[in-house]
Image (cartoon, rainbow, N blue to C red):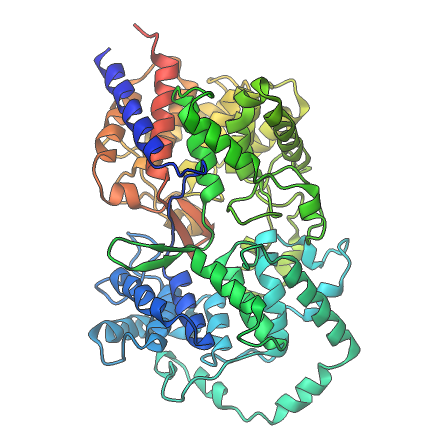
Length: 618
């Protein structure tokens, strides 16, 4: 009884704290924190456009703060260093004027880059950024021809078969690669010294072939493809000026507009810069971080749902404000009619507030959870709720699972494009994390069970995709703990019994990987080696996920569960690495997210489920 009382008291503390952080419009606005990519690219862009110089020292300050003692920049704590991040941060600082090659920190960065293969070993997106600035040679033959944009949507090679996340970037990249566009900097500003081979000499090749190449590119097909690509770019500009609400896509969009003749002071480019500035988050020390895609809708939905699970009434002002805010951001057919998708499906929600026509299943299922109880009580929510459910149903893939953005987008054709890391982002196949969460929604909140064909198809897919060790890989979080949590809670909600072999194997796996301190922690390294790799310490988010999965399949609290609950309460009262380790995943090996909402949301949800299930225990 003492432990239960402790948990209930902790829940009330969480509730009060979260309510105090809600904005007047009903939203919660936590930081979506990532590595140096956005800050570095923002510095480079502002220097190229000669605008907003006051922001550059703030951005440079954060970059300097994030450098490791060995000279590298990292994506996560237990990483020795991340080459591409280090190249980007170094280049940005060099251009910023806030650092020089003589600085000790820059010399350490140079040493790290050279020791790890030089610029030549950087990620393709880093090389692209460098090529735009004349710091890396464009390939003679760009592997993605502009003419892909002309193929019909039904074609196996069609641009429209790629995931929307990739499309948001590649329309710009097609233009830039076709034009081999590059800006010029003073000759004394260069990174020749960061090449291990003599690759940089290609930067000095005579330009005699450029005129011939350009003449060839001015034919009718080229002009037509460029015009179509430009139209796609313009159609996908959000009201805040950004491309698809992604900073990374907006950087490339601005360069591609410059490449086709837009001036630096054109309204389109100026609005895009303002949109990027609006993504900025200023810390107490004055440093500035550009969020790649502010997580306002995601955070608001997760928190409003979790508060309800914690016992907050739907009549509570905080819940009503959040619900009205989310209701206003549902994507409607009129908004989406001109967007570039093969599967036009209205009724969903997107990740960011400014995202008006790029919905995804994960955000939609999160919002549906918030609205479910309200839809049964108030007609203004019931229509939106039904549209949301219909969207989720329509997005189920033919294989039975659910993906994030697209339906049936996975295609082996994508692997024919010989671009490093392209296949892992260009397709959007079914994944265990989203499939599991959809099943948990349908089972626990819509009361659908095994007899429903959509449930059965989803369960069949999950069982088929379980790893031999009992885990599942999670695409949008870190990583096997994340996927296993979603799969187990989804299967249990759908009616699969705890003694089912798939659930038994998953529970055994969770118990095997438990840390000696009673918690769980997983390294981001798992995400790109595609095999579970423990973090050097337990984290509150991984511990919350693992415990929630165990609670879902145990009728009575076990010693492991009880000990984990106490550790969760203890650790979340301590600021530090257990609460700041990245738990979100974007691009395997290259982009990880510390959601500042997660150390509040997931522990509260787990504690609430603990009380719900075990409060009547003797």
